[in-house]
Image 1 (cartoon, rainbow, N blue to C red):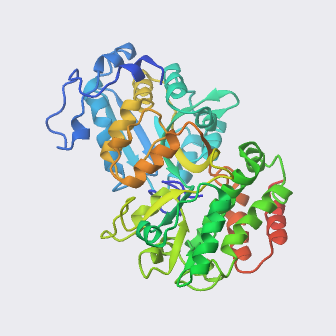
Image 2: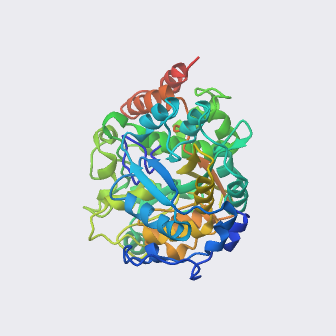
Length: 455
């Protein structure tokens, strides 16, 4: 689980003519001198590309989102080139209660012009209100050019496409110490078998446990295990079976999901493997997910920690996060080196109005130009947009995530529990996963989650 703007968990956490025509360095729009000094605010784009939407000067577009201070500044800055070009004013509203209130507002007939929606399940609920508006042709064309079919599919309901993807997160990562690997002669694994062999070797070398883990997260305790299980469902059974599992076309207590949870247990319920510097297996349930990976650099009592790209923010500021630094991450490998399943999350720009200024803004947000402007403005933000230049990303983990997302061999799947009904994805799955790691057997766990599925 765990998207960039998902509560209660940590918060971050185009061939249209516009997509082709918007380029950096063109001084076609009169940049505003009174904006912030950062280059994002004054980036120039080809304003002529908005002419087909008519005279938009003096118009406004409201944006509603769960992305709040301080992450909101980079979004606002990335909108300024569009505002300068068109004369449209973007009214940004961040709200920690977004995921509840956006549904309330839509059902009441008072939605924003555009919302940044963090889950496909919520997007479907918004479409069901009848208030969401199908994305314009320019946006659909840009998404066909700059994203994979899987991303477009997450924003498609009953054959209609509703919104371009925005940010993305990569969850299929393992954090490690580059210096330890160099000193001990460890190699970054490229298959699941090699990952198991590496874990065995670290355990045999003594002095530290291979893995450290923590799932405590207040009301959301248990969610990190859902990510583990989803990663192994993807790797052991493949993306098509994963999709069937998420959509309950196969039962949660079937052989596939049982095998996936047992595979996770080979790591998390193995006393020889966990929980370095933190305790025994049961300590996983009481260790916060924020603290869980810190022993890699703080005490050097564990070597590996599976967590998403956002986890870089949890290390102290004096810890260098880089391939040659104190800590970095590698891709959690597939069954073989050729396959590249990736678990992740993301957001989608969904409109509730079809006025020309809204369409123009949606189109801007679906271009590689906006993605690069946003990347320059942000830390800890990545997009699956194929046109993004990794050099515009501010830190090595962002670059790693972007490289993984852009890899033509990558098969991306959205976080499964974020797509399941709330009674399962953010209730039974979390609670039963917690019971499982503290002693409950796999069969009981998957049966209890299956029984929680709405009839």
